[in-house]
Amino acid sequence: MSDSKPDNSEHPSTRLQDGWRYETTVKKIEAAIAQIESGELDLADVFDQFSEAIEDLRLCETFLSDRQQQVDLLIETLSEG
Image 1: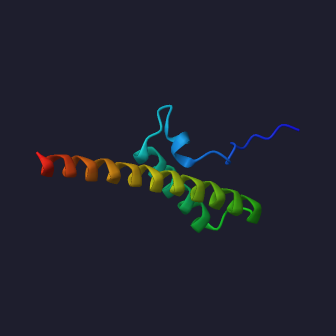
Image 2 (image 1 turned 30 degrees about the vertical axis):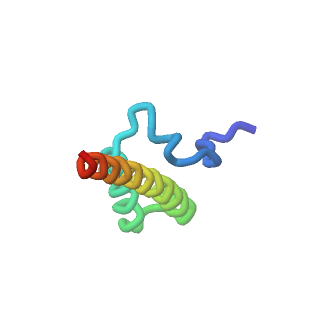
């Protein structure tokens, strides 16, 4: 059986490649929230939108955490110099 959903077993940071953009993902999350709040979706679609939004939020969190580590490392490097 073919499953159209992505494999969620990999670490989120692995999926941050191939042109992934934080800003685009945030807009996608905002659109999902708007659809959910509109009350026009079937319950199954609400759960699907919610699941995708959670997945996207995890990607955003991973991205921000990775960037924070990079900033911390740069600051540490500057402080040592």
